[in-house]
Image 1 (tube, one colour):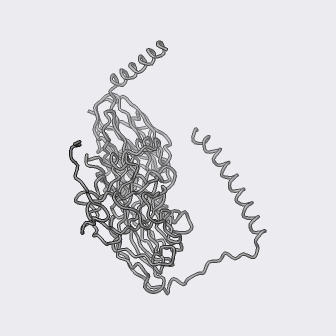
Image 2 (spheres, chains in turn cyan, red):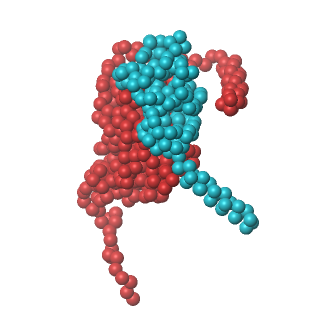
Image 3 (cartoon, helix red, strand yellow):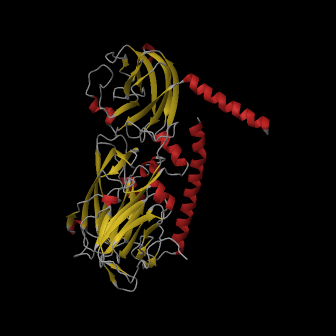
Length: 161
Length: 378
């Protein structure tokens, strides 16, 4: 009994230590999708650095907070879409004016030429997933690279200080 | 991978269910070939149309207790707004999903045989798909299957009020979003009055001088590591956290009209001695047990159906989660009454209390203080 009790305490203690040592920042990421039938058939140009009116976007990514300290950052991603599966890819960027290389035929960002650091694939509607990355100071883009979604406005930028 | 695996049994069981239903239908058809279930169809193009201006609870839109003339088409508009509201005196917040901006949504009042023609609007600034399921209506998941709209869209639904009583309506966009939207305030009520007014079960007409609509709402607010209620920057951001709290079936708040204290103190409901007041109590999700401290339920339709005779002289009545009920009470004494959910923990600690301030003459015959509290002597 005593042994089990002590063991339990040790486990709890080490769990607390681990949390304290990591001190990871948590970023809440929500995936917004207001796209109706046929909306993606029109060609959109709402990518990063394209100076587009983002109010027109029917897809988007909200993050809170928008700035975090460097180190471990945990992204808790929730897909608020009613029908569509989404994904989130995180890549290093120079700044928000950068234009990502885009493959028009596939309607996707050309991932080969972007410095991808991590991703969460296939998040179903109403479901959540998380991703933890050790990030150095700088700027990063979070975007969905399912065909058409990036140019529909499904991206945002986070700053790591 | 795991999603796919978990889907297989549910697909199988659904198929089994559908097969069972098909067999039942076939059996019924064989056994009763002569029974016609065709409903009378009205030419709605010839019906008069009226616009009903909806008002925020605890009030009801202007209405006649006894219908004037024949059936009408009653046009109403509900605009869905995702907005941050404060739900208690400590500043606890929730991003509510509100029909016409209020929690609960406004009451719609019609008579049996009338048609409700709803224009449902999902504001472009919203983040989520919404719809509406009217418990008072018939078919298509209460209209839920015909009203799914994305932000920036609107739709019109017409349904015939064939059941009399008080009924809940709520958003039901699918999957976990159904309870999630309901516990973010996305519910309201409809009252379908008998054309010839309310009756006591013995054929006597019952009238009310005033009517109040109390929407009870259970909230499930996530807490941080220190135990403080979490705040969120946008609607829907709390989904994962909130689902965890909802799974505990333990609300952090049970309130009337969207906020602890929304109907107390200076916001108390008002009445006069001699007035008969109707109290409609709606709870879209969870059981409740209304009680008027210092009074009674003179006539109570606790299931909500006006087709049934009301119970009389009740101390406490029961509202099943997912329903509304109605009560009539004639105030006989002045003073402050508390109208509570008589789970007193919920009433006092979670917020489910309203006040009714009643003016008039005190009746010594009903109650009097024979001797004031004083020390025990001898």
